Amino acid sequence: MSAVSGSTFDYIRVTYGEPHAARTRQLLAAHPELRALAGPTPTSAAWTIGLVITQCSLALLVGHRSWMLWVPCAYVIGATIDHALWALIHDCSHNLMFRSRTANRLIAIVGNVPLVFPAAMSFCKYHLLHHRHMGDLELDAGIPGPTESRVIGRSGVAKAIWVAGTALVQGVIRPRRLTRVRLLDGWTAINIVFQLAAVALLVRWAGMAPLEYLIASSVFAIGLHPLGARWIQEHFALVPGQETYSYYGPLNKVSFNVGYHNEHHDLLTVPWSRLPEVRRIAPEFYEGFHAYTSWTALLVRFVRDRDITLRSYIIRPPTRSEVEPRPSSTASGTEQPVVQHHRRTEQRDDRSPGASTG
Image 1 (cartoon, rainbow, N blue to C red):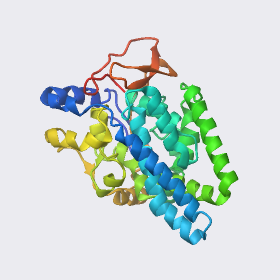
Image 2 (cartoon, rainbow, N blue to C red):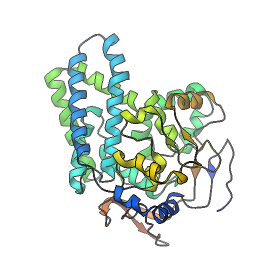
Image 3 (cartoon, rainbow, N blue to C red):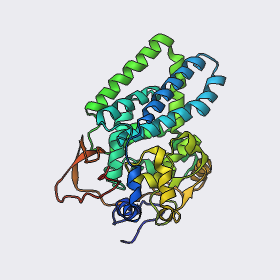
């Protein structure tokens, strides 16, 4: 393993590869029974539809009332529902609701409806690239870019504004930075058209008030909210030598276990409902890692600690490849963006039970 270089003024630059491929092989060698945890969970689709109906019903119920009622409702209830929907859309990106790629994409688009902004399909695309090119500034949309990092700096106020504007950062700023990835493709276009139609029908039938509630819920869900701290938890390198972090606190119960992030990166085809089993079966692989038990405490620390900046992130040299957004299916059905290599062919690693990288 190569030496780590960097300081609080720069990213943490490394030359070794991402750690999860090797950990997957070690996990499966030590605990082959983990393979039995892999596979889709169709009941997640029922959860998705149920949460969509619940959120839309709440919008109609409280949207026309005083902002003193609907804003707190959006922050406490609406944001929780939207965050849960993002966790379910995440499982769709790995084809963990149905075996059919098309069925997973369609249910993700349905789950996108209360989120207002048409982002499910672009999330799926960029998320798969995050797994395959973790730490690559040119292909990993999870990394704060140099410009946004420089603008935000060390200021607690600026960092709080950055967290509050996560929807803008992830929806507009990051895709513009990743110029090697084509933003618009067929599924993204379908997502946009369907979402625009759904929003237009809502406004025509019920007016703007319910939409205002839905927009607030969507922004709160991934913004300045305890649930929004998940974006800090997952990969901000706050412990030397560790790149991915899990959260084992109580909010996993309303977030479909999305906090089990180390486990997810290690075994990509294990759905949310069985991720805690990974840690239970192979505790020796996770006991040595730093993990969080409070998203709220992490959010406060991130804002207040001037030594934590947007460059508190591990990055590695970029992959010399041309990325196309068209998906290709692996043996397990786990979809990946197609990567056409110019200089070398990457070795395909066994990243999950019975599957290749996702």
